[in-house]
Structure formats: structure tokens, C-alpha cells
Length: 153
Image: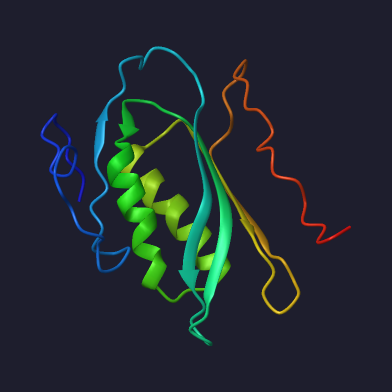
């Protein structure tokens, strides 16, 4: 559920980790520059979830880029949402795309992309990329800066 006004239920409050991504409350705030195209980036180098088959932890480096329209994601609510995956069993593809779709639903951005750079499971790293919309002309979206997995090479 999104808060569309300045009443934020989590910012400045002591809030526990949500039980699941579905129960996590993502909040948004008005974009102070809705007339300007720019990229906002969140880098999440220590994302964790649980393998739905083995119950073992999975680790990823996420990079989230978006060109906002009317809304920005409130960062504490984003942190709590992402933390809610720590005890959530889902495959890499599901986690990455779920996060992207949930943020697009909340923010209705002009453009959005998420890169999920997952550490190896069973000796194979899995990278997952999802994008919504087309990058507006003249907007600089830098490379996500995460090198392909090379192991010890």
C-alpha cells in the first residue's frame, strides 16, 4: 500500500522487518523535480533471500535505476522491503522481477531497470535484468558498474 501524501508511517519510527515482501509497505514521496528527466540509483550490495528448494541463503548485488515522474520511493521503506526477502523463499528470477514490478506499480516512473547480479548457486552465477519503458532521449543512464562474475579468474 502506498502513501501518497507526506504522512510516512515508517520514516523516523522504530519499525521491524516485514514478515514477507507482500506485507512490506513501500512508501513514496513527491518528486521535487517532476519537470526534469534524471536517473535515481539505488545500489544494494548485500541483498539476501532464501532458496525455495534447499532453504539455504542466496546473495546478490542489486542495482536499481529509474527516471521518476511524479514520485520517488522513500528509502527507508525500500530498505525494509528489500530486507523482507531475507526469510523469503524464491528463485533469483522471481526476486529480481518481483522487486522491479512492485516499484514500477508504486512509482509509475518514466523508465525503470533492475539488475540482479547473483552470486553462484551450484557453481553457476545467475544475472537477471528487467526493464520497464524506454529511457527518455538525452538522459544519461550509466552502466550499472557490476562486472560479470569471474570467480577467481
